[in-house]
Image 1 (cartoon, rainbow, N blue to C red):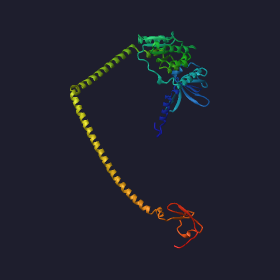
Image 2: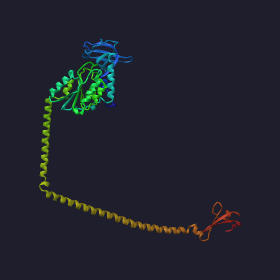
Image 3: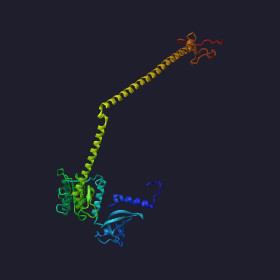
Image 4: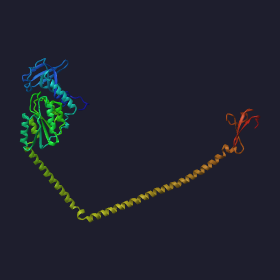
Length: 426
């Protein structure tokens, strides 16, 4: 949206609503606080606020979810933890927490630990959706990591056999609840990843249970086993509201083991339909390819180069002669142009020599004239130059004194003399 114009209130509320709804941090969040302004509407919805020492947060607990609450009756002043997502009511520009479940303080510490771990693994990229792989379309071997005695294993095998009777099923039994569950689940998944078993897809999980019963699938070791699985893996843990963390680490998550089997193993009719469609498309593609090759072959056979190859060669000979003729003509023109340029340079050279000779004669004449006016030429005829101790040239007798030392410069050498007599006669 452009910053050059003001936006309307509705547009701003819409932007805020979209920002909140697209941010996963606001979709599944636990909020702790004290209940205030508690009210039950005739529709059965709970409306209240959560407050702490400085702030209030509006909350809505709709009737469809209030039925799952089994704790003490909610009332003002009760310390609780509410789990839900943040929404914006655009007409009033108010945001509130859409509550999914509520627990009294002291009962929900485990949720805080799970949320903390979820945030840490999310920041590390363990839950990055871009790394998730597609499931194989026609798996030959299905691997199952779950309890060998629960209803989950029976449902998975029943659905798998119904959809694809010839499917190979390899069960890696494990404990899915209790202290030993994390190590047991991890080992079962690692065993199914052994290449010797040639497993194409893995379903790992269990049937439904309480939040505490499902805690093994919120364990970091189990989560990393899903994340590191070489084979595409489906998280199949029965749950109602909360998603276990293995759902985020797996390539695909299913709400129940039965749903996971339906996702992993397509029905025979679906497979046959897929094979028939693939066969139809391949046949059509081959027909088109064959017709294309026939058309190309027909066009090639119609070419004169095949029906009369000698004519084709003759045409090439003629084209070659034309090219050679053009090359010779270009070569002659090139040489002619270069000769013309060379003759220009020769004329320039001749003119330059003439000019240089004239300049030399003028220089010799000027040099001779300069020689005649040279002081050295005058000295060579018996004249001399007289200078005092300051190197000033003496031009008249009144410029010197008796006893003063003077320098006489001759054509060759110089003399030092003392003035003994001065005559002012011309």
